[in-house]
Image (tube, rainbow, N blue to C red):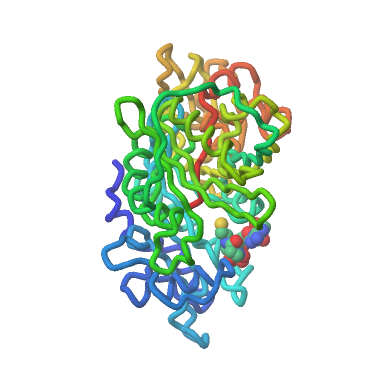
Amino acid sequence: MTVDAETFRTAPLDERAASEIAARGLELRLAEDEEAELAWRAAVGRGFQGPELKERSHEPGRPGTAYRRRLGVYDADGALPDLPVATFATWLSELTVPGGRAVPASAISSVTVAATHRRRGLARSLMAGELREAVRAGLPVAMLTASEATIYGRFGFAAAAAAATFRIDTQRAGWLGGDVPGRIDYVSREDARRIAPELHERIRLRLPGEVIVPGPHWDDMLRLRADAEAAGAVRALQYRDEAGEIQGLAAFTLDRTPPGPGTLNVIFLHAATDDAYAALWRFLLDHDLVGTVVATERSTDEPLWWMIADQRAAEIKLRDHQYVRIVDVVAALEARRYEAAGSVVLDVTDPLGITSGRYLLEVADDGAARVRALTDGEEAHDLPVLSLGVGELSAIYLGGVRVRTLAAAGRLRADAVEVADTLFRGAVTPALTFWY
Ligand SMILES: CC(C)(COP(=O)(O)OP(=O)(O)OC[C@H]1O[C@@H](n2cnc3c(N)ncnc32)[C@H](O)[C@@H]1OP(=O)(O)O)[C@@H](O)C(=O)NCCC(=O)NCCS
């Protein structure tokens, strides 16, 4: 049974993490009240090398970081004892998995350790503690987006969804996407803020790797926070179909130093229909005084690439993006759907010991799976065995990273690569449309 968001947020701190931290003369606490929250956010800002925090980031009544479980490590002997020397946040979210469904997930963010306290194992203690907390809460997975790709593999995370950055030369691109009915209109950023969550809720289950966008992230993307720098040239567009239904929303900024053509930076583009997708992209690519369109956090399998006449007008860069860490193999693997029937034994190793063991995965003809942990010495009926770390299992979980690719890379061993590859492969390439 999964907990509700508030129970998860306020659950007692992991005792082992607290005592490891206490052994270093420091204290682990939740930053609960308003003063503590401000100091905690100041520490996060410092950790990510941002400017000093001077004012509140959210108007009264806006959620701010209230939805987060905010962990802080405090050093009573420091010159600023109320400012945590390490920060870590989690919240209850949902991760879309193959089959148009979502699993409850612990989202992790704001992981910082002050430069004065780094490399003493604080991040390790906090991460291990919160992964154990996710297990206690009955969550199948944890997830995060990372500042550096080299930090989280050691804790069993892997990039299960990559992100593509498209840089398109609009003079060269051309358009093969045809004409679509419906209309595009500018909307105010406030209206976009109202439309975005509802539209995103309608579409997030179609895209493995996508998660619930926390409200304040929309404020950030649309530059609506109280402490946001000048909104600049943020513009928002809606697309309505012929029936007048809003089916798409995009936000972007424009950079231009006259007299040259400028760059249009897509902040987000969400479309509930193919028409909305085509209409919005066409509008953005065909914008006066723009020579380049840049869109980040796009899918690596973006239809857009097949809508431009000159594919070399697009430079496409790949990056690791959505990191996933399975903490309950049975619940996680039973939650997703599979494209083929078959059975395999998973022999999983886990650097933190959370999921280590052998599991029998049996997928029926309808794509539903039954999974159970095998007891010590239990026979597996000569089924093929897939031997892998929990990171590799997490990588293939969303169906976008191929078993055969990881086998060729030497990252896992499979008795029957074809069987496991066909089983785990997903119908939709996973992606995640924002950072959290
Ligand atoms: C990344 C950060 C949180 C690590 O904190 P820390 O307390 O110094 O980390 P720990 O001492 O617990 O190190 C844990 C392990 O991670 C490794 N590690 C830590 N930071 C690393 C980094 N930036 N790159 C690669 N490995 C790193 C350590 O070597 C250690 O490895 P080991 O235990 O396997 O030997 C800290 O350096 C930081 O605040 N960086 C700036 C903000 C940031 O990028 N945060 C991450 C947001 S996603």
